[in-house]
Image 1 (cartoon, rainbow, N blue to C red):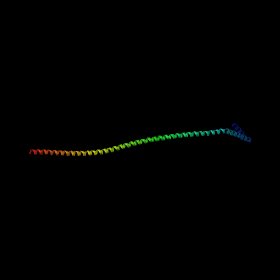
Image 2: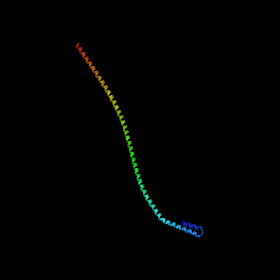
Image 3: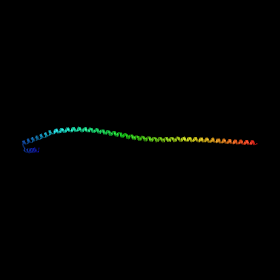
Image 4: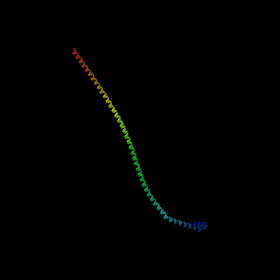
Length: 169
């Protein structure tokens, strides 16, 4: 192609109609070669285009498979996260309920102890008052018996003294 270009330049330097015609003829020849090369490239380009279409389809299928696998992995990961979260919430709720039950039991135990102490103290106070009244009643009954026995003893002694005095007179 360089040789024909040089020939065309040489011919172009000579101003004549034949050089112009030679240049056009050379250009038409080069154009024929380019068209011939394009004709030979056309099946290769069609094959490349077909290969690209097939590669695109294959990559689309692979991408779809990877997307489906990725979705499945995401679903599994979300399910694990949901289960782990549910377990953690259940454990925390169990701990809160356990603490609440312990606090409530302790409060009830304290209230029951205070109520028991109050009731026992009231009962003990009543029992002490009743015991004191009973002791007072017993001591006054004992005093009455002592006075009665003293009086009877005095009357008996007075009766013996009177009997002896009457006997002796």
